Length: 110
Length: 112
Image 1 (cartoon, rainbow over the protein chains, first blue to last red):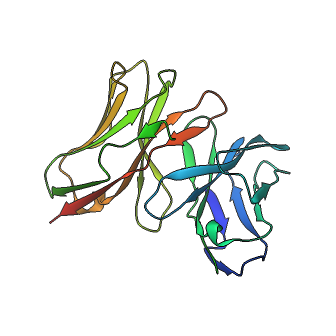
Image 2 (cartoon, each protein chain N blue to C red; image 1 turned 90 degrees about the vertical axis):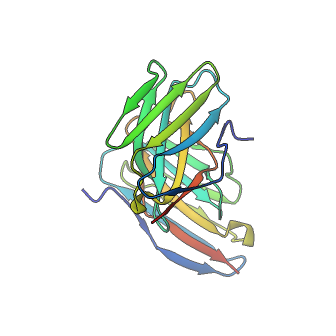
């Protein structure tokens, strides 16, 4: 199993550009999550999903959108990138409480 | 603010010593707690977990202690090695749906 995969690994965006961060898992987990991690800080939940077709906001959803059309994929969309969205983004999935994390996407908005 | 927090942001220990990383939580209804290790440039990795019906759980070189009276969680690492250098996060479950609330993290540095 590949576990949780994320693409791209790194990306630099200009202010106002948009992009989609990809996340996929092959463990057939119902739950999937998107976090952001700012330097020296913990993980903040952006959005999560309890199954295909169901998504909900986390602690910091503003400026982001998600969709969950399949069990495997959970893309995160940034519509109008802002410098405040410079961060490392982690996707995770779980069957129950233990979450399995991807390697992260480092995003810089200039 | 976050309901899970850590007492010390950094911890430096000598190789071979035991390490203790502490965590406070505020939600007395939480019934699941987990420790993650995050190495530089990587995603968090599971270390050990514990349910609220237990006080102690042991893994390989790691022990988690749960004190529900004072809402305190600790991670003990025996015979700390250079490979243990990382940021350690505690987390608690939030009601249902598998959501976790993460603490800020403690950076463990192991001196050779």
